[in-house]
Length: 474
Image (spheres, rainbow, N blue to C red):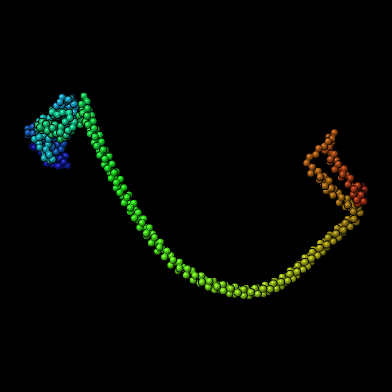
């Protein structure tokens, strides 16, 4: 049984591969030799199946490989970048240089979607089973040999000045050999040219010096030409400027003459016009003055009449004001008189009322005092009847009641004393002060007797004797 899946889509391949494997396993008992693998090849890789059915090359497809009877090998189709370096390579004149370049190489597969399998088969014949590094090494040796061969046919100057021509010659020389190996050169560029003896540096310095010399010569020629052009332009400009100044001066003089003539005609016209204006102005001013005088006379007349009318009105107003003030004065005088009369009557009534009130209060107080005095007299009379010596006792009582008040007033000056200094040999200074106050109080009965004729001591003795007799009788 042969199962080939060559025309399936990428999305269908996993499913079909699994389905084919399942069918192979299911039919194994009926077909013992129908056993193998599904080979899938991506677009950047070529799968080479060889065996009992010949050789098949798969690129971007899938197929079936029998076990034991067929083998599968893969060959990469990716672009390979190879650095080609030729050291101490001799040029056509025997100058040794070192040249480095970069080449892009790939296996020939045709152009576009048209895959040429015979070219891939040619590369497979040479390099199938090789690693990528081994393939790059083989191609590098081929490229390096052809590069040295082309270097030997050119001089250093040709290599240095025209690298594109060198790259084209190398490509033309190496393309046939690469195609015979199944490869194609996609691109080739020179990256560096150098030597150990300083030839290229000297060549560059010579070229640089020549270029600088040519640049200096060119600059000198350009500067000289520029200076000549500038000088000529300045001279032309000065000539043109002088010519224009002369023309301008002539035109200025002509313009000044024309302007003076025009100014003279203008001034004459202005004087004529001013004369007419002055005459018209004088006439207008005279007429204005006459009319102004008339108007002023009329104004004075009107003002005089107005003042007369104002005087008449003011006279009438003054007369009415006098009459009003007279009436007002009479009214105010009567009002004041009436007010004063009312105030006098009011004050009289008020005084009589207050006098009556005071008289009544005085009478009431007098009656009260009289009644109190009568009552007290009656009490005293009753006490005298009951106690024949009541008058003397009463007098003594009154005097005794006043003694504390008298003592307080005698000692009152001492309250205002802030500080006292006593000088005493026996230390009795402070006690003499209170003793003096007591002596003053003790002399009061003699003073009372001198002033009233009453001997308080005798009254007290008499009252003491009466009290003792009463007690003994009791």
